[in-house]
Figure 1 (tube, one colour):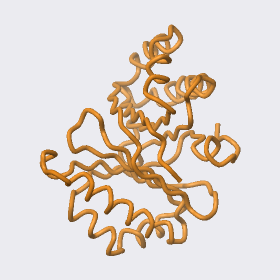
Figure 2 (tube, one colour; figure 1 turned 45 degrees about the vertical axis):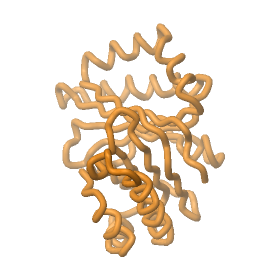
Figure 3 (cartoon, rainbow, N blue to C red; figure 1 turned 90 degrees about the vertical axis):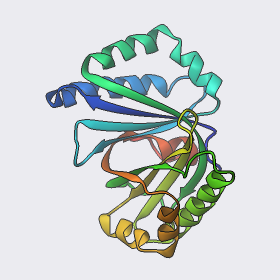
Figure 4 (cartoon, rainbow, N blue to C red; figure 1 turned 135 degrees about the vertical axis):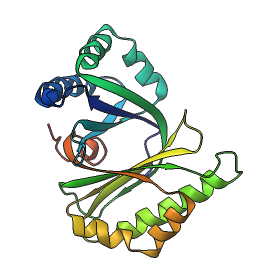
Length: 215
């Protein structure tokens, strides 16, 4: 399945860990509104397991222009002002380059976020080789029991930067996939910073394959 063209990856870090419930309520209200905006395709939000004050949201849009129009609205600005009261926000606009779905829809219990920086960023062909290696790994992972889906996005403002999210029904599937030669070839090109997380909200499958939203 082709990757969505424009991907907004936001990392939210709670200023006070006790504000998690309040942030999640505000965030869910925000994404319900976002889902109604022109050009919005899907999103997946997760919460880090080892650093639970950190949330990551992948938002997929048809075009960068669609997102920019929403960004300029009074409603979005009001929501952003509320968020900044409780979280620090790091935005990473990107382009989707790889998207693979498993053979069966399922609810993931684990999402692995991996951030890569591909060698020197000035090296001709480095990004293309990395994308080919990631695609090979994603296809190998798709054959592992427990695989749900994965996405890889190329950063627009971080030279050589990529972010991947791969969803699993269980930890065993992840371990099996990461023992493959395809994964070894991938990390030989770039060592990832890894964040394990659990799903908070998302409608990735709904927007692309017709499965009902997760609230």
